[in-house]
Image (cartoon, rainbow, N blue to C red; front, top):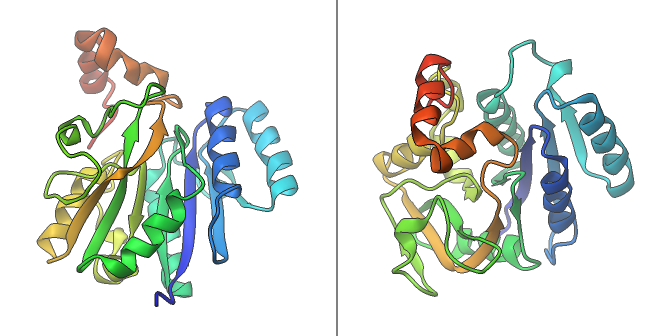
Length: 240
């Protein structure tokens, strides 16, 4: 029986409509144990911040406004990961990341939590992402050939909807992550395998993913790739 606790986090940068869908889906989950849910507000607009404060009071999740903690401009994924790791370690908990462009189903959290106890030596466990039509979408296009199964993979797992086990949190200190990067899913995926853990993608457990809703400029990757890569390298954005 898995006696671990569960911490859930959602980093937020505006995209209020999808963020509220994410929060609603998590708070309405059929999860059989108590969990701590924290929304990290990464310098969203005043309008988004005000709405998050109202919803936090109504629904009872913890809201952390990063502007009260740091002056470092968004994105602050490194700080969020470091704070969340320390909190989870203090409580002996697994850490589940559900990003603000993802909507989970009622059973998603329970299935991921149970898998942490059932799978062999897990480091990361991810739910596959689908679009509104039920098709596998970015970032798991490579998983289209796997239907209805849990796949051990050495490929990167995105943090769209991913559980980081307590064992991996204990083994690798996020203070050692590169401070010049913007995102860390690729590095942590590979680090998990390097440290002897197994990473799993649950293709039978789809979640709705609305890619890059919080950072619309990244949609250029699909519509105007030359402009996307020009912004990426000249503006030093999106460093992985």
